[in-house]
Image 1 (cartoon, rainbow, N blue to C red):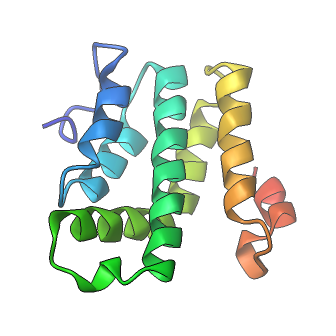
Image 2: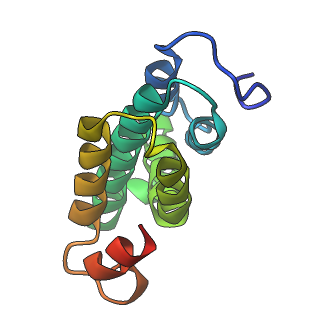
Length: 135
């Protein structure tokens, strides 16, 4: 259970955890494991970016389709990922902010671009200038 061990010894584990998010019922746990992992900061930021992107797509798909009304495994994954997008964005931001000194600029830039893409056209706390102020 990677959630109970914050120090991961293998640099490819963050990427594996993103793939585990596609198993029904695992997206929330994958997000939590990535947020609290220690070490391999570039890999973790890249993984958080990928998970945030998948979650953004799932949230969009859930609003345009009736997928959320089904009891299928695919519906469960989409609902879980949509929940991650709705509830974990700010937590992802704080996790990446804590890694900003040790991860590569490319990984950091990719994360910020994904955040800004997700909040395009939004108002309130999710506006791009508010994200920049948080940073």
